[in-house]
Length: 238
Image (tube, rainbow, N blue to C red):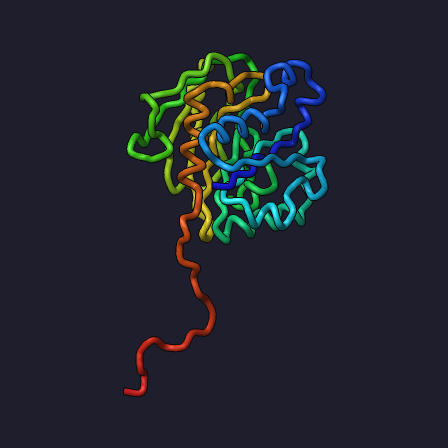
């Protein structure tokens, strides 16, 4: 499988805490464990030409992983349209944490994707609510994160095709933290954990979810629908 991990790569350059946790960038950490799982992985970042998402890169990508936070508005609309079209054409998309506010995710959802949030070093317990789903393979009943940013309901997204995880936070809020959607021939998974100042992507259970999600989101040569005016398959003259 060919996976592209996209990241703004801004916090890593400006915040020493983030740089210490992710010395190769959030994208580098994610790419490393996906590569160890046997996938062909490349990275792309905001400040590269075309944000690293050239036509060639997108056409060769089976699954795109997206992390963004402070620079959503800097993503070029032309690139956004190309990514959205590739999802409709069958590319898998995994949107992580604050990528809920990315132009790509909002375009695909058709809603504001807004939510409550709070940074208070809270415990998060990510409950598995669909234990039969392939994204939950190898997990226990829940994933516990000692410190994370809180996201709370109401999360302004369409009703998910499948709800995989629900999070509880020490402050009392809950959140639909793992949800799948289908758009065209493409499959989308949104996964909440991953604030940049916590080592969330170093945790094995979180890595397992992302590896499982990449396998789930990849398109296995599904049929391409034919639309428009069509000739009859049967003889209509009888």
